[in-house]
Length: 106
Image 1 (cartoon, helix red, strand yellow):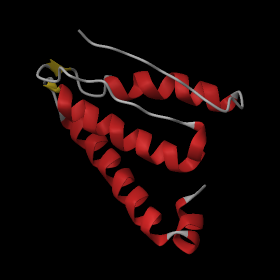
Image 2 (cartoon, helix red, strand yellow; image 1 turned 45 degrees about the vertical axis):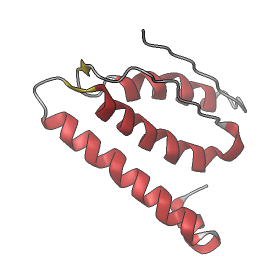
Image 3 (cartoon, rainbow, N blue to C red; image 1 turned 45 degrees about the horizontal axis):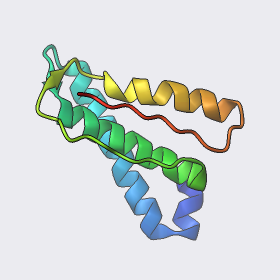
């Protein structure tokens, strides 16, 4: 489902996915400019924005649950989102209906 389609069919959802997409892009630009590590919570927000856009596109084919009790540490920028994107994009190209990725940091 595209944002263009959503504008005509569900304007509220179109607004939310546009906001999620701009958050995702803003985080990308910020990360590219960063020369230092970033808080994991920022990486998680970036990944949440990415997955929110993906969820709208694939509707019920992507279920996301977060189990992130520990977020007070730093990571290199653009670390988490590509880890999530890589297997999910592979799953979609294989026409898989459901994708589950579980990662737990301890």
